[in-house]
Image 1 (cartoon, rainbow, N blue to C red):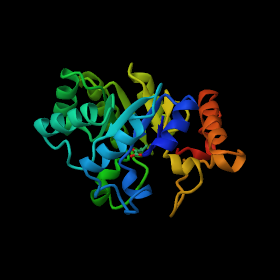
Image 2 (image 1 turned 120 degrees about the vertical axis):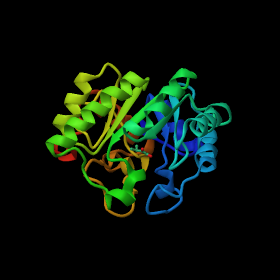
Image 3 (image 1 turned 135 degrees about the horizontal axis):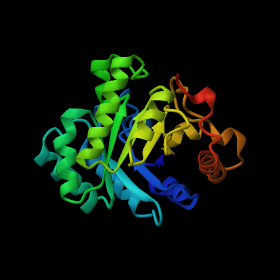
Image 4 (image 1 turned 45 degrees about the vertical axis):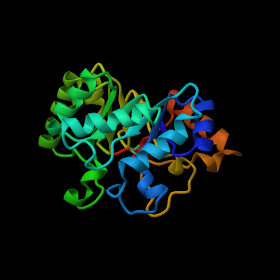
Length: 245
Ligand code: KIV
């Protein structure tokens, strides 16, 4: 999985063999220049999902449900429906723990594939006070494992795990039958995701530990994305230096 927000990059990613293109609310930072994902609206994600889905021929397009866009079941159904009907997405992703289970359940019931998102949840930055590794203490790790299981039971089709210790990601991945997708969660997840601009080495601000500039070792953007696909599939990426313990 890789993020994209426009047709040109989405087309490169699609052709390179990435399985899922995520129109992430990270667009608030990498496209709009905000310092968090909080200002991103449903219309913003919808617009970028339309741009991306027009050109994706083989990859699944997943739209990220922005802050407060799924705060109750009717609103979540309405917004997810827009991402599928107007945006051309085939799935949605949403952050949150136990309190979003009714939303996951309702989306699943109505045939909307859902990727849950545990670990570091950037929409909670104002509560967390920053972007930090999650699940390091025993209690938090047990709680996350429990939430992962109930997400699956409620109908989630995939689970994204962001910035958690590699051993915890491994335990969660082994406990679930749905695929896990890691970012800063080590090499034992079933799949990996990166923000495209981190892969191209053009992220501004602090470069996260889990990011790798694939363009530095490639002679084109196409080759950099292809190298990411190859290294994820062969287990070369993420390496120990991209992983939290
Ligand atoms: O919005 C985003 O880009 C994300 C990342 C974790 C991939 O959710």
